[in-house]
Length: 367
Image: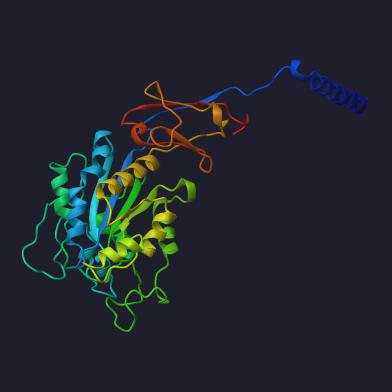
């Protein structure tokens, strides 16, 4: 009897579904209730911490390029200061790797720089700011950065930006610079390329300079893996990126080689930058534009809001401080389907302590 009743019950359900389907446009419609998430952009709920490490090439040809960087620095920092970001900012050079034991075994190279580095060359008086980590509260911030980033041009001509930022970020000398929940931005300025290798000594003449075929050359992928491990994030959820201002095409190469014959295309910089959603700047181009693009990308990636359900795309409504924000890639928000997140761009990036409301119709009832 129980089996028979169960059978009749299921037949009844099938009939009801069939009748509803046959009613055409007069049938009742079924939808899912809208879902919403409200975020408060502060340390308790939303993290706006940025840790920014500049890796400045300090080899013989770099003085004019360092000058271009510091002269246009305001294009980078103004937006972060205006929107109240909580940032740490430090500087190192492309020869920081020399602290490793196969090279000089001098860990002083790993420390963040507060000005001209004469650890190795000791050529005249140093210029120092006395500030190793620049904060939003740092007095005369732009001037301090100018001092810190002007690394002069007496450093090693064997540029190894990748192993240098790895050693600096991993060194106990800089404990507290990288915070557990911050967005990490690494920015490289160089007119050559990275040739990081733990097996090749500095300026090893038995290996051709700038030899991409050298078997001991660290892979670019190994540094992506290092940064993934360091930040405990990967893929669309990465909490870091690497940007580069380098020689990015043959036109710039031909022009810059007239002043710096040793310069080469930054092939590995380009690869690491593209692999980590960074921004490429041209050392022969407009530094203000490059720095503005770099800061804009950092602001976008660091103000990413992850949703707890998949949304119906045209149902998403975004408000900042109760004001609607347009769906716009330049000065609005966009949806990242890979990470199931909303990102802000340009002038729409929320300021500190803003209230962000995101409402949408979910595609499914269950998360």
